[in-house]
Image (cartoon, rainbow, N blue to C red; front, side):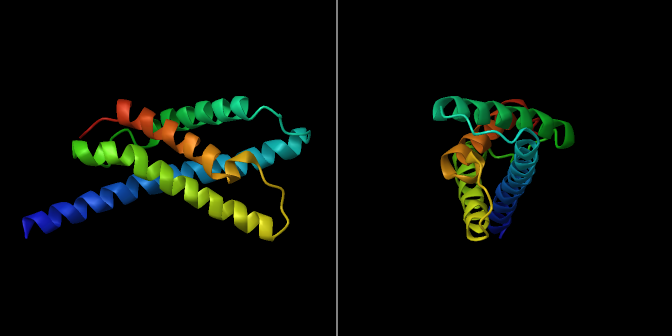
Length: 136
């Protein structure tokens, strides 16, 4: 019975980390749409520069998330490593769904509405949290 409890706790911890990253990514997406409206000029044409920018913004979001949630929600070492891949994948798919929703409503998309950029954002956030979040 204890093993079932441990599995349930591990699953809830993974879900908690995913929700934390998803909230930050959605806030970033909304913020970038707002900033785009202020500057309203064509997007940069260099996708590698944009990818690096999203990686940096994600790392910044990871650092900011440490202020609000300084302790990791996942305590098992194996689950923390799995979180480095699973949460960015889930966040990438979530942002792709949000992009599809915007596309159906004929809203303008930004690069964060695409899987690759969303994955990079979430991956860098997960890396920062993996390295610096305390394991209370």
